[in-house]
Length: 367
Image (cartoon, one colour):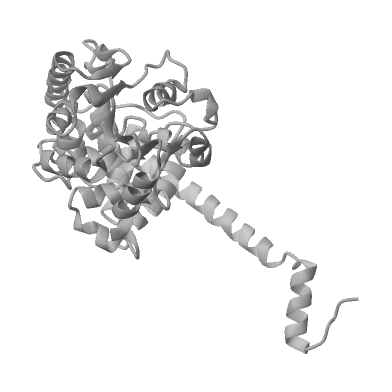
């Protein structure tokens, strides 16, 4: 049985994908260092988060999906050192679900790793991520609730650090909750990895991480364009298809730009984010949490630079972005078509030619 299990629960949009892009490709190296990343494949941690939170959607995830948590638990039980489980959707689990999860991992000592950032930036990033999941909700209507449903991700239930910490209480002692504050722009690019590695007890330089990058963002015009496009993508239904075609191909592949124009929500939403940040900071200060980084960064800055609201995007801007997107789509279709044609006309390797000829003629044509 693992002595310690570190469960990294997000929050969403706090560098989770960046950390996972280091953990999973190098799970072999981590194993050499005594750290197990359990599961048959990366998606087992996502599936485990669905199972733990009682989300019936796991039944639609294909063969073996409903066994993911059992697989993860069995591998943790067989490993004598440290284990790491990471998925940002765990953060929505209820207090009762957290207690069951800790019981499932017993007798290992469960630690929870929470990556966090100030809630206004988190809010805007979360809205954009919801668009990548096919949402059509305007920013003015986003984040107006605190859901009681642990299956819900894209509202304050998962984004409010204070709410998440309150649900953890009772299941995990405060001193075993590690709050990693997101680094600032002046910090080294790999600072988040260094903080995370320090928590799980790994030398950050012992694991390759130089080629991992945080997710890029769409600008305000591109985000508004995607929001409108989502209403017409009626054939893209499953979570797997949304991830493949909307998030990866369309948003990250075609709509992300180097000159992305950043944006803010409305004044009332800014005030709400500020209140939540102040409350979370008070809670962190009053508890016995292990805080890594400057806790003051969990507070929304007093002075914010001027930025547009997505509703200020003009029809002309959407049209221009649509033209650019169509041009890139044509270029992408052309590239893939030429690659496919080149592959069809590539001479078969000699061994393959020999096998095909013998099947067709019954003779050995090698010379």
